[in-house]
Image 1 (cartoon, rainbow, N blue to C red):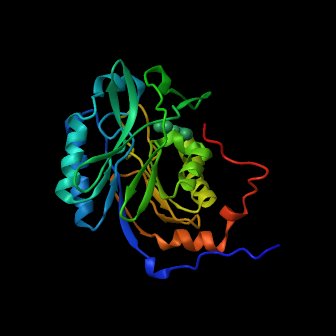
Image 2: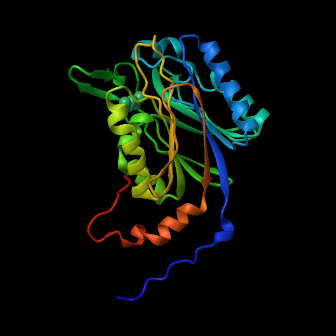
Image 3: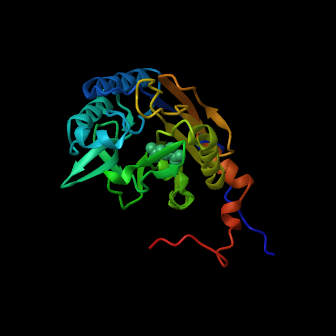
Length: 287
Ligand SMILES: NC(=O)CCC(=O)C(=O)O
């Protein structure tokens, strides 16, 4: 076999980026939820974060009966507040998600703002959370929501980032697509529950990170004892080696992770599965 040549590791390109995962206490008061998010963004920026991720449904209790009431167009009240917060604090804001109203449909939508406050990406949850585990949890987002129909990536000055929302994390092909398109970080605002959270939340993050040799981070709402839906919490970040480098419990708070972006090329160099794929036998086909 001819020797494979790999690009040399350029350690001078090592860049460490602090990100913050805002595990917010989401209540039924939309205004309070928005204010809480804006405060968290300012606090994280002060602590040196360059990107702040909010949880899924940061402005609204998570539940199909709430989506219609809390929904708003984009741009709207919630996303205007995120845009201002991004600009005032000079950070990227990945706005978790909100119920979005567009024409006669509702979507579960993540908006992304750059440090100038410009909207640079919009991701509508592609895979709706429809599951039925008898005696444990039955949930059907499709009762009120429509699915998005596009993967979403955005560029930062520290690399490309792929976005999914919660249940999207269960679909490895989406993560693989992002990796193939050059992403080194995947962000999944999410709200797992007390059945699937303990079983799968960390495992899925580590799986996506290891398979694709990139960083994966999640932001969940904090658990709210008085809510219908009990969120698992445990916002976390996993590095390209599969190690959990930051995590928390179910309480509200900011989780910080310092991402050494050179780890992506280091792990890909040391375990070169990307070059070793048998594309003569299988491949990801994008329609
Ligand atoms: N909000 C969601 O998509 C929840 C996904 C979830 O809990 C799962 O197990 O998957």
